[in-house]
Amino acid sequence: MDDDAGRLRLRIFAFVALSLFGALVARLWYLQGIETEVLQAEALTNVLEPVFEEAPRGRILDRNGRVLVDNEVVQVVTVDRNVVASMGDEERFDLYHRLAVAISRSGRLTKVTSIEQEVADPAYGPFDDVAVAVGVDPGLLVFLGERPELFPGVRVVQRTVRSYPYGNLAAHLLGYVGPITRSEWEAANAVIDFAEPGAKTYQLNDEIGKTGVERIFEDELRGVPGVRFLEVDNRGEVIRERVELGREPRPGNDVWLTIDVDLQARAEAELAGGLDRARDRVADAGEPRFAAEAGSVVAIDPRDGGVLAMASFPTYDPSEFINGISTAQFELLTSPDNYSPILNRAIQGNYAPGSTFKVVTALAAVTQGVLGPDSELGDVDTRLPDAGVYVYPFCEDEFEAADTCLFESPRKGLPEASFDLAEAITVSSDVYFYRLGGEGFWRRPAGPDGDEGIQATARSLGLGAGSGVQLPYERAGVVPDRD
Image (cartoon, rainbow, N blue to C red; front, top):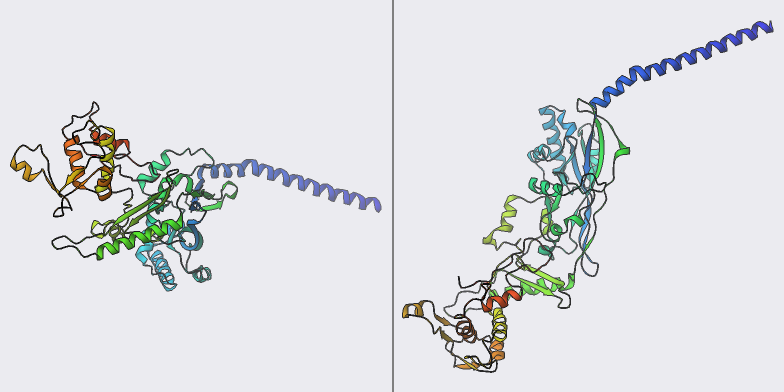
């Protein structure tokens, strides 16, 4: 009896072992045969779609480490393009309508057409989450999250946008960021090595520095974008996210400036106040009203050339560009009729130097012998008369004298006086410097390089060339010659 039971157990064990072995063989056959074919088909038809996430930009600080431009975390409503692409027109419109109502009720007026335009923007990829409202109330996160069946493909996520702790202070200097254009996108990516692991590549829905420090230090301020890889089948459906291939975004570098925020604030206040006082000044009879609608101030450290303050008026608020700016708003900022508030007059305008150029004329006269012991005009101590009117002595006829060779100065009508060089600079005597230019330089031939005396001195002092300040769109200025 015991022997029979033992043989039965042995048979059962052998059957189980053979069954397991058979199952293992069948599984191996399936994996190497049928499953291999399936995997090979997937490998041939499935693709990896990258979805990029823009990195936070670096901060901008003054010389003492005070933050002039920072990043602020805000709530952003996004729509998954892949989800809405699978919807019918009516279903998609209903979604956009519900979403526009929800966003508007949260305190941010939004139209259905604006959502449609944003999602349809060709700058986005087919699997991108498109931002349709930036800086919404955090309560909207709860409202939408509790109703996923009404808002498929809609999420509220956190993103960073630029913030300005000092408001519009130093707006022209700091600049602003905005959506990248196709030409900017092509130019930026053309110099990037895509094989480099930390390449700061651009997508057509990214932002880029447009003016000021934001533009000139774009390479430093921009971070390394993050990326997610979605595995997509040949029907365009997402199979899974390949988390192991992804990369988190890496913030950009901070940029320190030579600007002192206190001095910058003082410069802007004094500039605005000075223009106000000039506009309030009562003009003399027969004189036009003193407009004084715009101006600029620059303070430079003479020890190292560092810019301590750079103010331009009128100014603008760079935060207006955070959520996008309308065409009407931008036209207002660039309109000459509105004195072009976006223009940085410290570096982007060409203006007649006025009486400040007398210093250049004086230096040219002293260094080139127009004033000196052997000069017809005398030395620097020689006093020249100033009656408020000067007639260039080398005019050839009365018409030319009346039309182009008669110069009047603000001293016209005052008692005649005489000044030496130092006094002429002190009182800003126009007639004194008319004589230096007209009698001392005008009849001289040009030098071998074509330069004339005053022009050569002006160019040696840097006039007619860029200042070297690290800001974009600077105009070099002009040193005119007799032609």
